[in-house]
Amino acid sequence: MDVKEVLRLADEMVFAKTGEHLDDLQKAILRGVWEGQKYSQIAKTSYCSEGHVRNIASKLWKRLSNVLDEEVTQSNLRSTLERRQVFIVSQNFGKDFVFCNVNVNTDSQSPEVPKERSPSTPTSDTSQPQTRLDLADAPHISLLCDRTSELATLEKSIVQEKCTLAAILGISGIGKTALSLHLIQKIQHNFEYVIWRSLRHSPPLETTLKNLLEFLLNKPEIELPTSIPERISLLMEYLRKNRCLIIIDDVQTILSSGQLAGNYRPECENYSILFRQIGETTHNSCLILNTWEPPREITALKGENSQVRSLQLKGIGAAAVEIFRQKSLLNPETWENLINTYRGNPLWLKIVATTIQEIFRGRVAEFLKYDRIFLGEELAATLHPQINRLSELEKKLICRLSREANSVSIEQLLQDADLSPSDLFDGLQSLGRRSLVEIEEQENETLFSVCPVVRQYVLSNPVG
Image 1: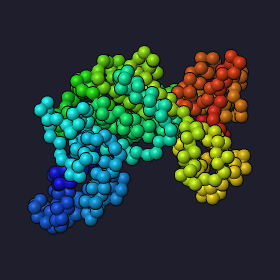
Image 2: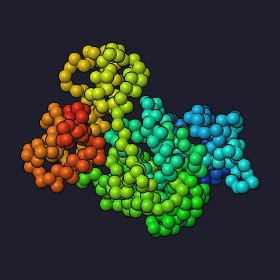
Image 3: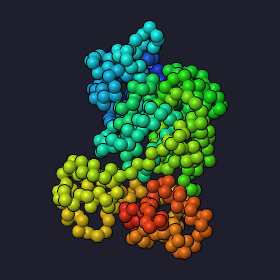
Image 4: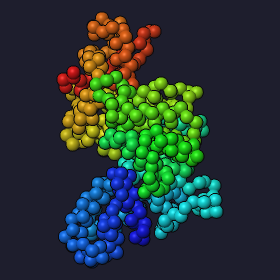
């Protein structure tokens, strides 16, 4: 990597993570350290004191450490960034692509900064368009237990049927993020742009739009319209002219707590305008939302013949044995019991498998001798924010359902829960959208229950 590539990569990864570009002094420090200069030399060429350079450098290394999820220092800067480049290549995101404007070609050991694309500038593979990827905000890609069917469904909806808005839904730990990352590997060559963004810090819509537009337009310093409608209009124009895939993770953070599923926090209400316009307007792109619960636009617009789709992720079933193999668990004849109890949730199973390994030396049979379902602080912590965000109506219902070991009918709930049919239906529907109730049919009657893990959490923790 030459110094220009380093500066471009570092700047755009920082921008993707924080929404801010590196300033001139930070770039000078990066350039100087990369070229082997001491802080005193950088200070001299930057016309400032050595102490000031050291102070800014310390803050810069912390920022890069946060972006790269590993410690970055003056001494390991080169090895860290070169290792990140190797990591990008190893993920096999296509034969020839652009990551944060840095071209990575698996057939070359010395990638070059890409030139502006034009009809006269062919890519290395003329059968497929070059794809610009901005995945700096995405987590590391992880093992994906068998999701062949789900990947095929999403690929068909997005690539063949060209849906414009899709939601991947499911309780925390079920694998929405991992599925989306592996989906990128399968379909990224069908798009000119692939962008990953997370809403985990609930950024205002203005910031999200600015972030998307600056990458798509490839002009970080461009002066954008100030109003949200104008920015949405500019984004929609780009989505019509180009084939873009945008994945937005952690969408539940802009949705409201204390209300039924799908309602927005007051300060994030305008995201509804963006999602609805993308779902209702004809264009060439696709927006994927990863979320615990669907925004109301998804429930209102989705359908088999619609350009809006949703995929509710369930547990991984027998494929979970790979998790147990990795954890070196024993007694494989008991694994199915463990999978069923924890409903095939990959995160829950990893947590409990770690406990079995640490306490029982991997003996699942010994662990299963105890009737009480083990939650532990780590697993309980994953459930707490999801249960805590329920409305009072939902809390009342989930407490009632958790008192029963077996499924309960609507008639029983109406008798015992002291609710009107309308409130009961609203509550059950909302809990279903949050993946917190299980529904089954028995002799022409609909029955409801909560899974053992959620039931144990509710019984062990005051709710409401």
